[in-house]
Each structure stands twice: as C-alpha cells, then as structure tokens.
Image 1 (cartoon, helix red, strand yellow):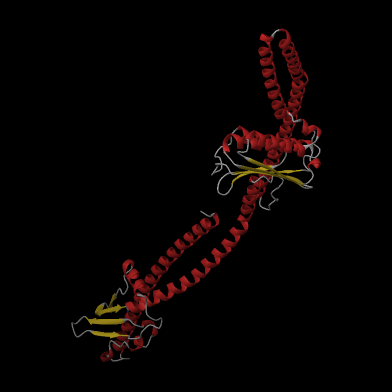
Image 2 (cartoon, helix red, strand yellow):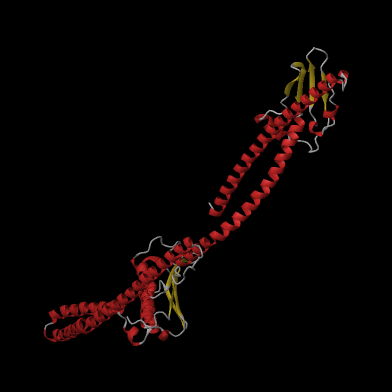
Length: 451
C-alpha cells in the first residue's frame, strides 16, 4: 500500500472519529439545553402565576384573570411549546400552545431516527403553583419535539460544515506535507534502480531531513564499496585472462617447437624407412607406412590444437585474418551442411589486444556451441568496430525457441570475459527459431590494459 495514502487514510479516519465524537457531544448538549430551557420556562411561568396571585391577593389585580398566559404566548422563547395548567380544585384545566413553526427547514428523517434512538426529545416539566403555602394548581410545560429536533439539526449542521471544511483543509495540508517529506523516497528508489541496472557511478543527493540524508549516505557508501569491489574483480579477471592467454601462447609454442618438430622428424624417418623397405625389406614397408599414417594424424591433431590454443594469424595478421581462418575452418568441417558467413565493419586493427582476444574467444565459443547444440543451417557473424566501441552479433537458425534458463560453462565464460572488459552481453531468440548472441565492448576503458 502507498505510504502516503496509508498515512492520509489514518489521519482521515482519526478526523472522522473526532467528528463523530463532536457530533455526539453536540447532540447531547442540544438535548441538555432543551431540557434546561423547558425547566427555565416552567420556573418562569410559575413565578409569573405566583405574582398574579400576589396581585390578586393585594387587590391590584382580579382573580378572574388567573391564570394569564398572554405574556408567555408573546414571548419568542416559548415557540412551539405547550403549557397545561391543572387547578387544584379540580376545575376545568387550561392548555395553551404556541403554534409557531421553526425556520430551519425540514429535518432529515435519518437524523430524527438517530436522535430518538439515543435521546428523548419533548420531555415535559411539571411545577406546582404555590402561594402562602397553598397549592393552587400544577403547571406543565411540554416542549415541541419539532422545534427541539430543528434546533439540534441546525447546530449539528453548522458544526459539521465547519468541521468538514477544517478536516478537508487539514487533509490537504497533511497531503502536501507528506508529499514533500516523502519525495526523497522516490528519488532513492529511482537511484537504487539505476544502480541495479549497473550505473554505479550515480550517487544520491544530500537531503535536508536527517533520516533521508542518513539513508542516502549509507546507500552511496554501499554503491562506492560495490563499485570498488567490482573494479577490483574486473581488473583481476583481465589479469587472469592475460595470464591464460600467455599460458596458451606458451603451450602452443612448446607444442609447435618440441612436439611438432619431433613428429615431423618421425614422419621423415618413416618416409625414409618406407623408401628403403621397398628396395631391401618389402615386408616392413606396410609397417613403415602405418607409422607415417599415425604420425600424420598426430600432426593434424597438433595443428588443430594449436589453432584452438593460439591461432598464428591472431599474432601475425590480426583479428580479421584470424576470423576469416576460423570461419573457413568451420565451413570446411561442416561439409556444406551449415553456411557460415562473416561480416566485418570498421578497422579491427584499432582494437586493443585484450578486446581482440576477447572477441575472438567469444566468436570461437559461439561457433562451437552452434556446432554442438544448434543443428543450424545458417550462421552469421557480424562484427562492427567504431571509434568508441566494438559490437558483435552472432545469429543462427538452430533449434532454440527460448533463452536458456541457466548458463552453461561456455556461456558463463563468455559473459565473464565480456564483463571483465566493461562490456555487456545479452541473448535473444531469432525469428522463428535460433539464438542471437549480442555483445558490446567499449574501447576507452580498456585501451591501456596490458594483459
């Protein structure tokens, strides 16, 4: 869940809870005020009636006018209420109502239901009318339920309007504040994504808030440490590849100078023995010829091994000639079942030796994999060299329909060789089937590397 939305939801929920509590308190106070107003009206009317009795007793007023409710009827505080007076002598009771209607409009039925559910509107108040310790009657004030509901609804609506505006304003301010406070989180996530994709030179900025600044500093330190370890690993890989090529060169030279020369001498002696046996001992001629056959087979194997270890063209003629020879060799071995094509663009002599060797080894491994696993009829090798990078693309129409889930030793070695030279490699599926191997090697970072 989005943190910003989560916090805003929590705040809105707390605000709604406060609104409900405020609404409940408002309704309770409205009910309390209505009861107090009814009690106050009853007390006031009782005092008025007692004054009327006092005037009648002193001869100022007439007893026939008792009880006189005209003053109360003209008082707006009694709007909608009714009063009932029951004389103590069991004479006919009197009842008077103020029929004024509230001006607040119709009260919603839902509000009335809720109000009646928790509160009791229209509770009457009764007070005795006593003069000179004699009870003349009982006065009851019956408040108007309609007026009480209208007053409560008016107060609640005013409170809710103000509270809703306040809550909306607070939520907006909180949203803006949270957005501003959480903006570094998006920057950090974007920065981590860039680092995950290999851009370890990127560094997070220094944020104003201490918490975000500490996180950014920790991430930057981690990226710097990872970049340093990766650089050391790549330097070690380049050094190991250089040592490996030196070992290949040494083995190729030893095989050529020692073992190859010995086999050539044996082959020459076998030829001499064959020629001598033909004249002096014909029964040894076949065995001497067999020795020549074995020796020639071993010489052919030695030549193939030397070509795989360290092609002579790579040191003497360069990468382009080595690739031509490599493609010609595979074309010859396939005996027409697979069409091998080579396309070179740019100046291969501008490539540093580590890149030239890496490209040759990658192409060599790709062609070996095609011959072993692909069952392809067409293989195309495209190498493009520019001033800043070398791009390689090897395409076949073999049986591959999906990218391998795991890399074998060959593909893993290719990827490590490319990564050691700060390059990238990716695999794709050709249409309708077959595998595409693409590699890109920058020229500048490795221009001074000496394997």
